[in-house]
Image 1 (cartoon, rainbow, N blue to C red):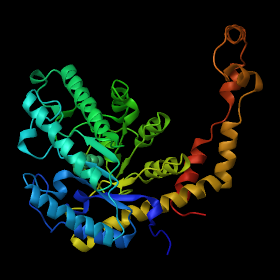
Image 2: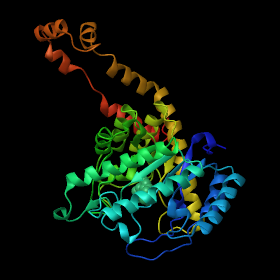
Image 3: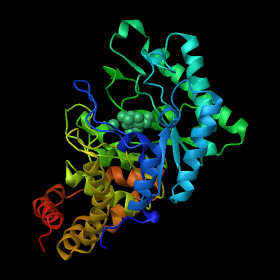
Length: 389
Ligand code: GLT
Ligand code: MN
Ligand code: MN
């Protein structure tokens, strides 16, 4: 069947995605969320590769060691019975009231220490279940009242936390890769390190930058009107795209976490084309949930839709790249220039090249006159996306 997910597609879902019961800040749950075991069963049938979890998605906060052992054993059985894996794990450092003013960035060193303890324990749990990517989404690491927290100190505390945990990972012999997930706001008024680009800058300041990359999310960049395709491109260029959170989002709304491709199909298309053409081998994680209006049957349709949309866009990317009109325009756009300029630009600066370039005379009118048929290209893109031959 066309667009049927395969294990090799590396599609994953967080336990909190199909587990979402449709609660929002204004209303109570509308459905019974899928339990971890139910999710593993359903997603196994649909062809997903695995599931990801926060410590407390699987083991409720405050569980005893015996309860944890029982839950984990049952979960492991479900994973192996359904051919599913856990490629990524993370820590819930936002749900419990103790983290109401942040975890790593809390002004209270006891809260910061408790956060580290929670992450270390959760890293142990995740590693035991097979996770090799560890995500950090600092949902509460922010402020509404900047008078209360020094923002420079907050970033330094974030760095101390990450460095501590890198050391912990190394000391345990874990080969975790850490993936930092940015978000500009929600649940805090402002969250520190609000974009993927900010995260990339922060990573360069860490003690073990090679261990740490990013986990960009469509919705998080889109909320503030940024171009997600561009954000991911920068992560790819930096060799830092360790994981990606796919979903849908309208600019300027609350964090909608919609089905992948539900909004802005063109941006989703360029994203998929980017991931495919640059050979992204990590997990494509659908960090989304079904609409509050959905019942459980519709939640299954939501999960199928996320994966199906990706596969449709992957096929569209192939069509786009093979399309004669697109090829002709791209060839025109990319074959301009001349040998003299190529020689000057290739290999970087030398004193001779600098001198030659400074004295070169350009025919600026000719450069300006080159046609840029972007109207035609964008229309063709639209037609390919909408199935017009
Ligand atoms: C939460 C958030 C997501 C993060 C998850 C990982 S939790 O659902 O909205 O974007 O990826 O902590
Ligand atoms: Mn989100
Ligand atoms: Mn996410």
